[in-house]
Length: 296
Image (cartoon, rainbow, N blue to C red):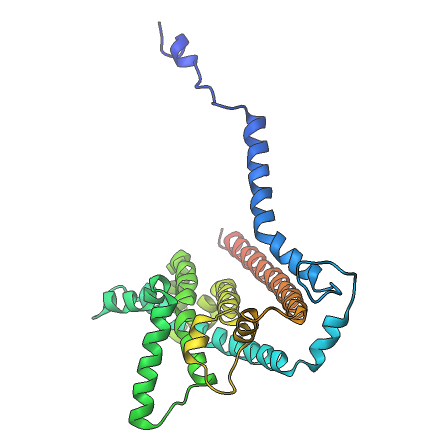
């Protein structure tokens, strides 16, 4: 009797649960995760319209907390400083992360590569408290020796770039490793210089990863508390530090209003960036298919 005709070969293992149960369980678990993640954000937005100064008691609908933001100079100054720091941090992190990722991917062997790779990735696994404390001690020693820099916007930016560099390198390195090196080799065979190959071939293909790294590091800088607390000085209080200091004394509902505005702005920015990344990726795929047809 052949194996194909044997009852044992035709027997199929039965699933522990049916397909319908597995699909329903998966959707229910996904819904529970979304509720766990986004219900607190939704409740914060709802209570930003609460007329009562007590956060957990609803007393009617009002816009007065949004109107009071205009006169809250401390909070507005913190928001403006956080936005500037986030933009500068994202730009600096993406630039340095691109250089680090390019060195790690394109140059497999050079003296100190293992140490360099470990130092770039160290902030990912090291507690932020340790990073902030070490930076503070280093900057204090440098300031005592040279009288510069004083703790403020510059020192916060340096700390945020150090943290963002690690994340940007991981994102960009993953994209560089997926690229086909034959495209760059073909461009060099056609007479392009190394810088032209990077600017005209490599850079357009890794643009989505650069945008993703920019958004990631922007978000990390915008909501950072630990590094900012260690590295800030007089007149350089960021929005998270303002909110954290007020939370210890009882949150003012105007903080909820500012958080709701921030969530709206970030959500719009993420949607626009996601659309731009998807559009760039579709354009790259169309160009790749067109090049394959022309080559064929």
